[in-house]
Length: 369
RNA sequence: GCGGGUGUAGCUCAGUUGGUUAGAGCGCCUGGUUGUGGUUCAGGAGGUCGUGGGUUCAAUUCCCAUCACUCGCC
Image 1 (cartoon, chains in turn cyan, purple):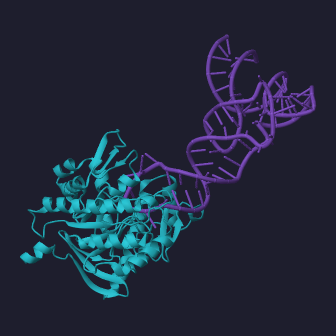
Image 2: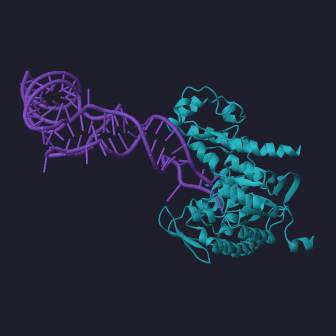
Image 3: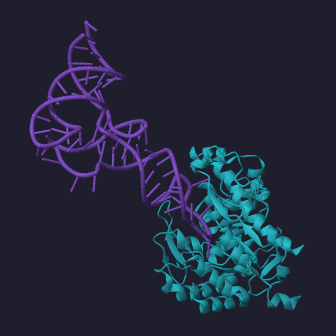
């Protein structure tokens, strides 16, 4: 036991079965076990937009995301902690994974400056200079009460403008990972193994296969509970992303959870699961839903705002078992609510889209029985 | 009854000192969105410039009449 503690953590991921390259497993967190493959709805500011936690749970969701960047800026981790931590604050009693803020600094913050120490950027609300470092990100996520803490990484755009910074960002991400681990261990040193949150490292490398391999191997050699693939779905083509997932599939450490960050179009979701990915999150389900786009059996999509649905008395998807479809809300009603900008429309469509992805994940998990 | 004002896209209005395919916002139609800048982004359709005359090479613009709406006064 002592030896094991010295060498590294107890494995928190249990692989139950493999079917071709689909992995059916279980991730053990301090708030219960998560069956994988799993889709994780995004609740950036502490709530899946427009939904009561009971509604999120009813879609089959086992875990949701929160965000270090957003919650740090508003209302601040001290405020959250005073109100009992993220779970008590948000009334979501299942596991919560927090993103580290690395991606948000990359995608949202203007006027950012990246140095070896960390990142400084302006608070978009009031122009205050904010700084985020690997250590600071760990502290915030611990203060929030996250159950799965993500490493603070340096993300690079994969459109034409950003590809020449890939190597620099990768090496910095690795150095930051080591700092994250030291700080994470310091902050959790007094916690019992069953009480401590999990920690995931993030592999980068852009579209360079050698760098990707190197990064994955480095992250997997570190003391992490799971390995995440970052830096995809950030401007590259679908084919480029799929090629990379194909390439990475045999390289993962099978004893750890594999998390593909930010991917969740149904087609990509299936592709990733069939290439060894266990966990995914994506804003598409809820963002599309709020804008009136819903997924249908067969991975098709419909725009509920289209005129042709005005007198359509069918549910979004007649084959769907989500609460929205089962409770008889028609396309015609949803179109009307979208047209008058009633937020109920986005909520009902979000329930449907989240359920759509959860159902896909469930179908893969059923391969185990 | 007298006097003033306004009639331009479905709506609210710009504009043209007379000159190619008359604009905006909203609405409407269609599409985008992949570790969420919640009211988003992009594209598109849509107008006999109230109606009828006149002047002019040319009128949505100037003139006359007329209709509608509106304000004020007897």
